[in-house]
Image (cartoon, rainbow, N blue to C red):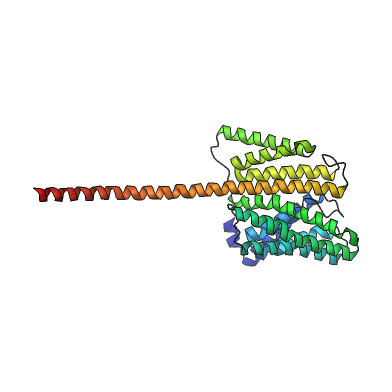
Length: 330
């Protein structure tokens, strides 16, 4: 793949990557539209927001047109007018790019192996940048007459939380993707544990989407996933829980099915945000511990090697000193 990229001109390579970003954003947006609750374009879980934030982090900010084109293709069929669609698409691009700039300025690292990185992702990525997109998009719909002025704050809240959930669940997984390697010679017990975690994760996700009395069962599974399978396991479990609970809420079933739509989504998104932040923070802390342990082990190895190098010399020097003392005594 790298060889093919070298054979392309810079302009051709840029166009190819922008096209790929556009396709990825559009595909992620189509998933979000399946759960849309306002005008078929505002969803309580918007995976495209997670894709949009990951693009500048992984590929660089110069590929932002792919985000804009993906948002434009998504919204142009939904309307209500071309100007409004352009504003919404611009907001969907400006939000993640601003979040990226703030996070890079703060020293964010894609490895997500420090707790401050998780905090920056939540504060700037999930909360800050998505708020810009939500306000611009909702404002454009209100000014166009597609929404009443009284619906501004409620719609903006759903838009904001939906984008935030997309960042919390999708962006960490995409940041992990370049470093993912298929394990070799995995013990059978490890495979069995992975299967057991998958079954328990899906089971608790289903329970969480059907009854409030079983919501707490999600968190032991998250702890298990974070401790044994690090960020990949924890974030996949979080994504499953969010998908099941939001699906239930959108279709009026589950623990909050009897509530009005706005109240239902408020409860579900508050729970899902808690799950997402818990999975992200806990798995990051575990990874930070692993990194510190590896650094201590490496430092101990270097000290041991230095001692092994010094010890023979010290023994030789002691022998020579002893010989000189013997000669003087004799």
